Image 1 (cartoon, rainbow, N blue to C red):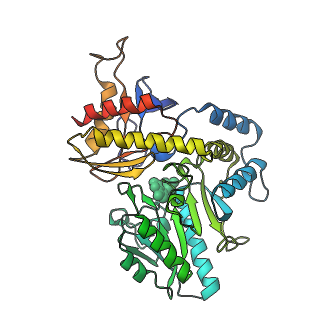
Image 2: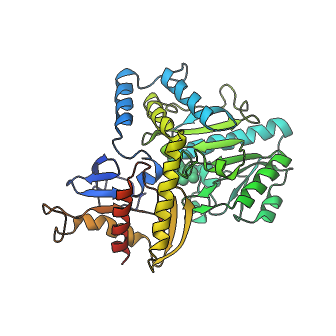
Image 3: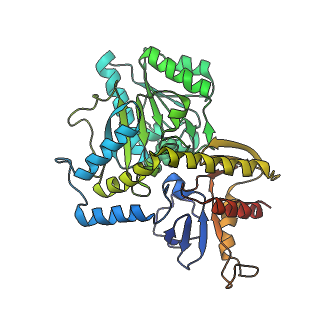
Amino acid sequence: MTDVFMKTYHRLPVSFSRGEGAWLFDVQGRRYLDFGAGIAVNCLGHGYPPLVKAIAEQAARLNHVCNYYQADVTTAFAEKLVGACAGMRRVFMANSGSEANEGACKIARKYSLRKYGPGRHRIVSLQGSFHGRTITALSATGQEKFHRDFGPFTEGFLFVPPGDIEALAQALDPAVTAALLLEPIQGESGIIPQSPAYMEAAARLCAERDILLMVDEVQCGMGRTGSFLASEAYGIQPDVVTLAKGLAGGLPVGAVLAGEKAAEVLESSDHGSTFGGNPLAAAAGLVVLDRVTRPEFLAEISRKGEKLMAALRDRHHPRLKELRGRGLMIGADIDGEAWPVLEAGVARANASPQGASPGGASPEGLLLLSAGAHTLRFLPPYIISDAELDQGLEILWELLA
Ligand SMILES: Cc1ncc(COP(=O)(O)O)c(C=O)c1O
């Protein structure tokens, strides 16, 4: 492994060079079944033919224009995305989830300043949340471990414990609060869904107090939980939605969308991004949107998610404790540390071919994710087959043994 990279990532000892469907292949050609989809990014798997074709054709046609102009493909993508997000009217295209949340925070601050004057700039978010790594997205992130060493932070953020409606009602003081930012299902902290009662209360309190309800759907959106947005399943209407990760199925793009209340807040020169809504990402995003807005495609995500959840629950592995999640976004608390299970999933592909598949090839590896020290996180690509889910579960049982 090279050591030219800054030491930001705790990486597993494998380097990939190719992917196909729900499989990744390392530089030695060994196969790994992908139960993580690049942390919810490769939602249509690897090398999905319509996605490859769209990117290749777009690459030959147009890669970039600056924001002095529009590009046909980015306009088509933006229109389709706004149409897919119920109640949203306008979108700003960014490159990542952090940037999308930065945009949301700017919208909140300006909305409140222009309507109520200075002093009403608090943004409430949840303990255990994860909103990104830029300074303001970190300021909104309710996990102390990410804050160490990087202060001072953007001021005006207040964290509340998830699930505590009383604490939320107190924190959402309308004299000083511009917005509430929350993940309907917290991803990085262990797949923690908010309860319906909590989401309903959050939506009601925000509406009554003219506080923007901003949902971070960077990880749980784009069909991941079986509805286009996870917030839809709660029956609430956010004022602002942020998306990224699966939005272009593997190309970098982020988006912040705003509905009636906040769609006109950002005006000329208020915000910008050189690469946001890049034509290659937009071409890919159109393919993803075409799939994840089809009810029958979303129903398949739900069905596969229920199958995975039922298998994890019903096979009763003694090391598997609590299970949480929805659709193909599942967290399983385990007895012991999660990381060694991830290591074993990779190492399995390195094992000697003894007892391996015909032809003497090494056994398949299994790519898993963790979320916190003791939680395994399952975010497989939507196109994974039932047989592949079963195969992954067999391997998982072996790894947990
Ligand atoms: C809910 C949520 N918001 C924001 C982010 C940050 O996204 P990015 O890494 O694209 O900046 C993430 C990344 O994991 C996330 O899960």
